[in-house]
Image (tube, rainbow, N blue to C red; front, side):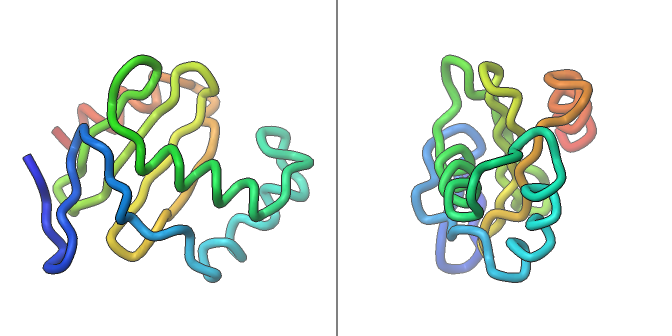
Length: 113
C-alpha cells in the first residue's frame, strides 16, 4: 500500500527514492550526537545524512526491515548495522542505533500497525 503526501507516494516496504535528505534543521539537532555519541562518532554530517537517506529510501528485504506509520512516516531498520531511520515527505527525521536494537523496531512497528 502506498501513502501519498499530495506529490509523492511512499511505500511501506518498497524503495522510496523521492524521500528528501535531512533538512538543515534536523542536521543541527543531530550534530551533537555526531560529536559526542558513540554510535556515529567520527563520521561527518554529510556521511550521516547519506547513510540515513540511503536506508530510509531502501526497499525491505534481507537485513532491511520496514513499515509505514499511519502519519506517513517511512521507517527502516538495518539488522546488520542496528540503524533505525524515519523519514517523511519533508525529509529524513532521524537515524540512530536504539540501545534495545531490533526490539525497539518491533515495538515501534507493533505500536503503529
